[in-house]
Amino acid sequence: MTAGKGSSSFSANIVDFPARHNAQVGFERTELLRILDLYGRMVAAGEWRDYAMDFGRDAASFAAFRRTAEYPQVRIEKRPVLRNRQGMWALFGEAGQVLKRGHELVGVLAPLERRLVKAVGD
Image (cartoon, rainbow, N blue to C red; front, side, top):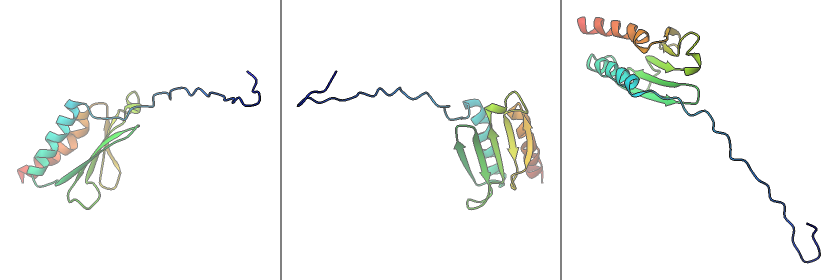
């Protein structure tokens, strides 16, 4: 179509709907129940007082704190990308060191369960 005097021309740009980005990673109900059960028992033992959860595109993490205004004592992280490699679950210590990695949440939480048994037994 040619534009003559007095007529307007426009070009319509068609923009494709953006491709769906990776949804954020989260915890399944059973995973979250297991983590919160451990958290509740650690609170009852006087070990932890607060927690925080973070959900990103690559990972979901649960951090437990001894006191509110400090670094987390432990952090439990789920990274599905590592499912077929070293396992999607990781347990990090207070200084950020990896304490345990694995394919199953139960195995990764085992060091915390042992710590809880010691704390309750004392």
